[in-house]
Amino acid sequence: MKRRPLGRSGIEVAPLAFGANVFGWTVDEPTAFRLLDTFTDRGFSLVDTADVYSKWAPGNSGGESETMIGHWIGLGGGRREKIVLATKVGMEMPGGKKGLSRQYIAQAVEDSLKRLKTDRIDLYQAHAEDPATALDETMEAFSRLARDGKVRAIGASNYAAESLDKAEKAAKSAGIPRYETLQPGYNLYLRQDYEEKLAPECQRLGIGVIPYFSLASGFLTGKYRTEADLAQSPRGAGIKTKYMNERGMKILDALDRVAKDKKAKCSQVALAWLMAQPTITAPIASATSIAQLRELMAAAELSLDRASLTVLDQASAY
Image (cartoon, rainbow, N blue to C red; front, top):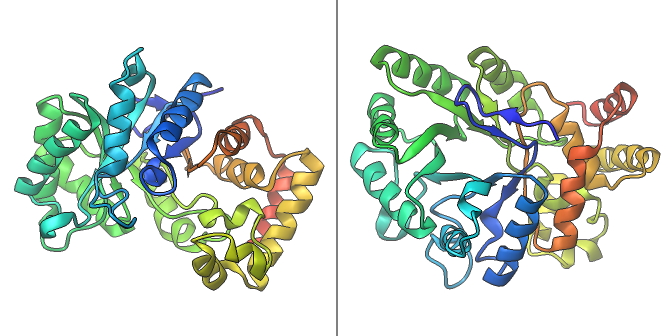
Protein backbone atom coordinates (compact mmCIF):
# COMPACT_ATOMS: atom_id res chain seq x y z
CA MET A 1 0.00 0.00 0.00
CA LYS A 2 1.67 3.18 -1.22
CA ARG A 3 1.83 5.99 1.31
CA ARG A 4 1.15 9.60 0.41
CA PRO A 5 2.66 12.85 1.77
CA LEU A 6 0.77 15.32 3.95
CA GLY A 7 1.84 18.39 2.03
CA ARG A 8 5.52 19.12 2.60
CA SER A 9 5.45 18.12 6.25
CA GLY A 10 7.54 15.00 5.83
CA ILE A 11 4.66 12.95 7.24
CA GLU A 12 3.34 10.15 5.04
CA VAL A 13 0.06 8.28 5.45
CA ALA A 14 -1.85 5.39 3.91
CA PRO A 15 -4.50 6.51 1.38
CA LEU A 16 -7.48 6.29 3.78
CA ALA A 17 -8.07 8.14 7.04
CA PHE A 18 -10.35 7.05 9.88
CA GLY A 19 -12.94 9.64 10.92
CA ALA A 20 -13.33 9.45 14.70
CA ASN A 21 -16.31 11.82 14.83
CA VAL A 22 -18.43 8.74 15.60
CA PHE A 23 -16.61 8.01 18.87
CA GLY A 24 -18.85 8.89 21.79
CA TRP A 25 -21.82 9.26 19.44
CA THR A 26 -22.66 6.06 17.57
CA VAL A 27 -19.57 4.14 18.76
CA ASP A 28 -18.87 3.23 22.39
CA GLU A 29 -15.37 2.89 23.85
CA PRO A 30 -14.88 -0.90 23.54
CA THR A 31 -15.95 -0.72 19.88
CA ALA A 32 -13.67 2.28 19.30
CA PHE A 33 -10.71 0.27 20.62
CA ARG A 34 -11.47 -2.63 18.26
CA LEU A 35 -11.87 -0.28 15.30
CA LEU A 36 -8.56 1.47 15.96
CA ASP A 37 -6.74 -1.84 16.44
CA THR A 38 -8.18 -3.23 13.20
CA PHE A 39 -7.35 -0.03 11.29
CA THR A 40 -3.73 0.14 12.44
CA ASP A 41 -3.12 -3.61 12.19
CA ARG A 42 -3.83 -3.29 8.47
CA GLY A 43 -1.17 -0.60 8.09
CA PHE A 44 -3.44 2.45 8.04
CA SER A 45 -2.39 5.34 10.23
CA LEU A 46 -4.22 8.68 9.90
CA VAL A 47 -6.87 9.09 12.61
CA ASP A 48 -8.82 12.35 12.42
CA THR A 49 -10.74 13.83 15.33
CA ALA A 50 -11.50 17.25 16.87
CA ASP A 51 -11.90 18.72 20.33
CA VAL A 52 -15.60 19.35 19.65
CA TYR A 53 -16.39 15.69 18.77
CA SER A 54 -19.00 14.54 19.72
CA LYS A 55 -20.57 17.51 21.46
CA TRP A 56 -23.84 17.15 19.53
CA ALA A 57 -24.74 13.77 21.03
CA PRO A 58 -27.16 13.87 24.00
CA GLY A 59 -25.30 14.18 27.29
CA ASN A 60 -21.99 15.11 25.66
CA SER A 61 -20.01 18.33 25.99
CA GLY A 62 -17.18 17.79 23.51
CA GLY A 63 -13.89 15.99 23.97
CA GLU A 64 -15.45 12.51 24.01
CA SER A 65 -13.71 11.35 20.82
CA GLU A 66 -10.28 12.59 21.90
CA THR A 67 -10.78 10.98 25.30
CA MET A 68 -11.55 7.58 23.77
CA ILE A 69 -8.50 7.80 21.52
CA GLY A 70 -6.43 8.76 24.57
CA HIS A 71 -7.68 5.74 26.48
CA TRP A 72 -6.75 3.54 23.50
CA ILE A 73 -3.26 5.08 23.32
CA GLY A 74 -2.98 4.49 27.08
CA LEU A 75 -3.34 0.73 26.52
CA GLY A 76 0.29 0.80 25.34
CA GLY A 77 1.72 -1.74 22.93
CA GLY A 78 3.20 0.98 20.74
CA ARG A 79 -0.24 2.27 19.79
CA ARG A 80 0.81 5.93 19.72
CA GLU A 81 3.57 5.17 17.21
CA LYS A 82 1.11 3.36 14.93
CA ILE A 83 -1.00 6.43 14.21
CA VAL A 84 -0.69 9.84 12.63
CA LEU A 85 -2.87 11.74 15.07
CA ALA A 86 -4.88 14.63 13.68
CA THR A 87 -7.20 16.86 15.68
CA LYS A 88 -8.75 20.31 15.36
CA VAL A 89 -9.39 23.51 17.27
CA GLY A 90 -11.80 26.39 16.81
CA MET A 91 -15.37 25.17 17.03
CA GLU A 92 -17.40 26.24 20.05
CA MET A 93 -16.84 24.27 23.23
CA PRO A 94 -18.77 24.58 26.51
CA GLY A 95 -18.62 28.02 28.06
CA GLY A 96 -18.54 29.73 24.68
CA LYS A 97 -14.85 28.89 24.16
CA LYS A 98 -14.01 28.99 20.47
CA GLY A 99 -11.94 30.62 17.74
CA LEU A 100 -8.31 30.81 16.67
CA SER A 101 -6.85 33.50 18.90
CA ARG A 102 -3.34 33.08 20.31
CA GLN A 103 -4.65 32.66 23.84
CA TYR A 104 -7.37 30.17 22.96
CA ILE A 105 -5.14 27.96 20.79
CA ALA A 106 -2.54 27.82 23.58
CA GLN A 107 -5.18 26.58 26.04
CA ALA A 108 -7.07 24.31 23.65
CA VAL A 109 -3.97 22.38 22.61
CA GLU A 110 -3.18 21.59 26.25
CA ASP A 111 -6.74 20.33 26.75
CA SER A 112 -6.47 18.12 23.65
CA LEU A 113 -3.05 16.75 24.61
CA LYS A 114 -4.41 15.84 28.05
CA ARG A 115 -7.45 14.05 26.64
CA LEU A 116 -5.34 12.28 24.00
CA LYS A 117 -2.73 11.18 26.57
CA THR A 118 0.15 12.23 24.34
CA ASP A 119 2.85 14.89 24.27
CA ARG A 120 2.42 15.73 20.59
CA ILE A 121 -0.21 16.10 17.89
CA ASP A 122 0.95 15.10 14.42
CA LEU A 123 -1.49 17.34 12.54
CA TYR A 124 -3.23 20.21 14.34
CA GLN A 125 -5.92 21.85 12.25
CA ALA A 126 -7.90 25.07 12.37
CA HIS A 127 -11.43 23.68 12.28
CA ALA A 128 -12.93 26.69 10.53
CA GLU A 129 -11.99 30.27 9.70
CA ASP A 130 -12.19 32.76 12.55
CA PRO A 131 -13.17 36.22 11.23
CA ALA A 132 -12.57 37.72 14.69
CA THR A 133 -8.84 36.85 14.67
CA ALA A 134 -6.17 38.02 12.23
CA LEU A 135 -4.56 35.19 10.24
CA ASP A 136 -1.13 36.43 11.30
CA GLU A 137 -2.03 35.85 14.95
CA THR A 138 -3.37 32.37 14.27
CA MET A 139 -0.33 31.31 12.24
CA GLU A 140 2.02 32.68 14.89
CA ALA A 141 0.14 30.79 17.61
CA PHE A 142 0.48 27.54 15.67
CA SER A 143 4.19 28.23 15.06
CA ARG A 144 4.78 28.41 18.82
CA LEU A 145 3.27 24.96 19.21
CA ALA A 146 5.53 23.60 16.47
CA ARG A 147 8.57 25.27 18.05
CA ASP A 148 7.72 23.71 21.42
CA GLY A 149 7.33 20.24 19.87
CA LYS A 150 3.66 19.97 20.71
CA VAL A 151 2.63 19.90 17.04
CA ARG A 152 4.43 18.36 14.05
CA ALA A 153 2.40 20.01 11.27
CA ILE A 154 -0.59 22.32 10.94
CA GLY A 155 -3.55 22.30 8.61
CA ALA A 156 -6.84 24.02 7.84
CA SER A 157 -10.40 22.79 7.60
CA ASN A 158 -13.29 24.56 5.88
CA TYR A 159 -11.06 27.35 4.55
CA ALA A 160 -11.79 29.28 1.33
CA ALA A 161 -9.15 29.32 -1.41
CA GLU A 162 -8.47 33.01 -0.78
CA SER A 163 -7.82 32.31 2.91
CA LEU A 164 -5.37 29.53 2.09
CA ASP A 165 -3.45 31.98 -0.09
CA LYS A 166 -3.43 34.62 2.65
CA ALA A 167 -2.29 32.08 5.24
CA GLU A 168 0.53 30.94 2.95
CA LYS A 169 1.72 34.52 2.48
CA ALA A 170 1.49 35.27 6.20
CA ALA A 171 3.57 32.20 7.07
CA LYS A 172 6.14 32.92 4.37
CA SER A 173 6.48 36.56 5.41
CA ALA A 174 7.04 35.61 9.07
CA GLY A 175 9.25 32.61 8.28
CA ILE A 176 7.02 30.25 10.25
CA PRO A 177 5.28 26.92 9.48
CA ARG A 178 2.50 27.01 6.91
CA TYR A 179 -0.69 25.02 6.52
CA GLU A 180 0.29 21.66 5.04
CA THR A 181 -3.22 20.24 4.63
CA LEU A 182 -6.78 21.20 3.85
CA GLN A 183 -9.86 19.33 5.03
CA PRO A 184 -12.80 20.25 2.78
CA GLY A 185 -16.14 18.59 2.13
CA TYR A 186 -15.69 16.61 -1.09
CA ASN A 187 -17.22 13.51 -2.64
CA LEU A 188 -18.82 12.25 -5.85
CA TYR A 189 -21.92 14.34 -5.18
CA LEU A 190 -20.26 17.39 -3.62
CA ARG A 191 -17.75 18.35 -6.32
CA GLN A 192 -18.16 21.83 -7.70
CA ASP A 193 -16.83 24.10 -4.94
CA TYR A 194 -13.77 21.99 -4.32
CA GLU A 195 -12.87 21.32 -7.94
CA GLU A 196 -13.41 24.86 -9.21
CA LYS A 197 -11.90 26.85 -6.34
CA LEU A 198 -9.94 24.78 -3.85
CA ALA A 199 -8.25 22.09 -5.94
CA PRO A 200 -6.26 24.55 -8.12
CA GLU A 201 -5.07 26.40 -5.00
CA CYS A 202 -4.08 23.20 -3.19
CA GLN A 203 -2.19 22.01 -6.26
CA ARG A 204 -0.39 25.36 -6.60
CA LEU A 205 0.64 25.40 -2.96
CA GLY A 206 1.44 21.69 -2.67
CA ILE A 207 -1.11 21.22 0.11
CA GLY A 208 -2.28 17.72 1.02
CA VAL A 209 -6.06 17.21 0.98
CA ILE A 210 -7.95 14.98 3.42
CA PRO A 211 -11.63 15.43 2.54
CA TYR A 212 -14.51 14.74 4.91
CA PHE A 213 -18.04 13.65 3.90
CA SER A 214 -16.25 11.20 1.58
CA LEU A 215 -19.35 8.99 1.48
CA ALA A 216 -21.91 11.82 1.75
CA SER A 217 -23.12 10.77 5.21
CA GLY A 218 -23.49 7.21 3.95
CA PHE A 219 -25.53 8.01 0.83
CA LEU A 220 -22.72 6.85 -1.49
CA THR A 221 -22.67 3.42 0.15
CA GLY A 222 -25.91 2.76 -1.73
CA LYS A 223 -27.82 1.66 1.35
CA TYR A 224 -30.25 4.61 1.27
CA ARG A 225 -32.60 4.38 -1.69
CA THR A 226 -36.13 4.44 -0.23
CA GLU A 227 -38.07 6.15 2.55
CA ALA A 228 -37.83 2.93 4.56
CA ASP A 229 -34.04 2.98 4.26
CA LEU A 230 -33.89 6.58 5.44
CA ALA A 231 -36.07 5.82 8.45
CA GLN A 232 -33.39 3.44 9.73
CA SER A 233 -30.76 6.17 10.15
CA PRO A 234 -30.40 9.24 12.41
CA ARG A 235 -28.98 10.93 9.31
CA GLY A 236 -31.97 9.99 7.17
CA ALA A 237 -33.64 13.40 7.04
CA GLY A 238 -30.41 15.14 6.01
CA ILE A 239 -29.65 12.55 3.35
CA LYS A 240 -33.13 12.90 1.88
CA THR A 241 -32.85 16.70 1.68
CA LYS A 242 -29.35 16.82 0.22
CA TYR A 243 -28.94 13.76 -1.97
CA MET A 244 -32.22 11.99 -2.80
CA ASN A 245 -32.82 13.67 -6.13
CA GLU A 246 -32.36 12.92 -9.82
CA ARG A 247 -28.61 13.60 -9.78
CA GLY A 248 -28.15 11.54 -6.63
CA MET A 249 -29.95 8.56 -8.16
CA LYS A 250 -27.86 8.91 -11.31
CA ILE A 251 -24.69 8.72 -9.22
CA LEU A 252 -25.93 5.63 -7.37
CA ASP A 253 -26.71 3.96 -10.71
CA ALA A 254 -23.15 4.66 -11.90
CA LEU A 255 -21.72 3.33 -8.64
CA ASP A 256 -23.82 0.18 -9.05
CA ARG A 257 -22.50 -0.38 -12.57
CA VAL A 258 -18.85 0.13 -11.69
CA ALA A 259 -19.17 -1.90 -8.47
CA LYS A 260 -20.68 -4.81 -10.40
CA ASP A 261 -17.93 -4.65 -13.01
CA LYS A 262 -15.18 -4.53 -10.36
CA LYS A 263 -16.86 -7.02 -8.00
CA ALA A 264 -16.75 -4.35 -5.31
CA LYS A 265 -19.10 -2.40 -3.04
CA CYS A 266 -20.48 1.05 -3.85
CA SER A 267 -18.66 2.50 -0.83
CA GLN A 268 -15.36 1.12 -2.11
CA VAL A 269 -15.90 2.58 -5.57
CA ALA A 270 -16.82 5.99 -4.14
CA LEU A 271 -13.65 6.05 -2.04
CA ALA A 272 -11.48 4.72 -4.86
CA TRP A 273 -12.78 7.54 -7.08
CA LEU A 274 -11.63 10.05 -4.46
CA MET A 275 -8.25 8.35 -4.10
CA ALA A 276 -7.80 8.63 -7.88
CA GLN A 277 -8.18 12.43 -7.86
CA PRO A 278 -4.76 14.07 -8.30
CA THR A 279 -4.97 16.45 -5.34
CA ILE A 280 -6.33 13.98 -2.77
CA THR A 281 -4.04 12.53 -0.10
CA ALA A 282 -6.47 10.43 1.94
CA PRO A 283 -10.27 10.65 2.14
CA ILE A 284 -11.71 10.44 5.65
CA ALA A 285 -14.34 7.76 6.27
CA SER A 286 -16.06 6.65 9.46
CA ALA A 287 -17.13 3.15 10.46
CA THR A 288 -19.18 1.89 13.37
CA SER A 289 -18.43 -1.84 13.04
CA ILE A 290 -15.45 -4.01 12.13
CA ALA A 291 -17.25 -5.38 9.06
CA GLN A 292 -17.95 -1.86 7.84
CA LEU A 293 -14.34 -0.81 8.44
CA ARG A 294 -12.94 -3.79 6.56
CA GLU A 295 -15.18 -2.92 3.64
CA LEU A 296 -13.87 0.66 3.59
CA MET A 297 -10.21 -0.31 3.95
CA ALA A 298 -10.50 -2.59 0.93
CA ALA A 299 -11.06 0.54 -1.18
CA ALA A 300 -7.33 1.25 -0.91
CA GLU A 301 -6.69 -1.87 -3.01
CA LEU A 302 -9.26 -1.00 -5.66
CA SER A 303 -7.85 0.61 -8.79
CA LEU A 304 -10.36 2.21 -11.16
CA ASP A 305 -9.53 2.29 -14.86
CA ARG A 306 -10.16 5.30 -17.06
CA ALA A 307 -13.48 3.92 -18.35
CA SER A 308 -14.82 3.47 -14.81
CA LEU A 309 -13.69 6.95 -13.77
CA THR A 310 -15.40 8.40 -16.84
CA VAL A 311 -18.70 6.69 -15.96
CA LEU A 312 -18.55 8.18 -12.47
CA ASP A 313 -17.41 11.60 -13.67
CA GLN A 314 -20.24 11.86 -16.18
CA ALA A 315 -22.94 10.69 -13.78
CA SER A 316 -21.84 13.21 -11.14
CA ALA A 317 -21.21 16.10 -13.53
CA TYR A 318 -22.39 19.48 -12.25
